[in-house]
Length: 155
Figure (cartoon, rainbow, N blue to C red):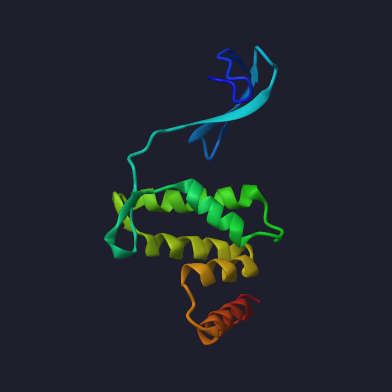
């Protein structure tokens, strides 16, 4: 493992522990040259998921891209990075459980919105407004009213 600080090759593992329901290992490392400490994750290499975008363009599923979208939606909201990573993990797990290699971006967005709605209403509306590309305020208000209606059912 190469040190991200000094680019030295020698590192030692200080701590290892399973994460993500045992599907990956978190390792705390220290560079033997500069003593810089950093964390690495070892995960199972999965068969790539292909995302079918609008216009039938295809790209490889990128969990980091999903996480960045969630972080943006949760900006200045009391939602931890750990919760967002958990959402990404659950959505990816649902996608892989379907057993298909290609999935439409629309379907992924719906899964993300369902998970985000359970965590933070404001972040959900932010994500939905970008994802669904609301054309005007009426469509936006319809979504808010639906959210309020569902919240009242849950009380």
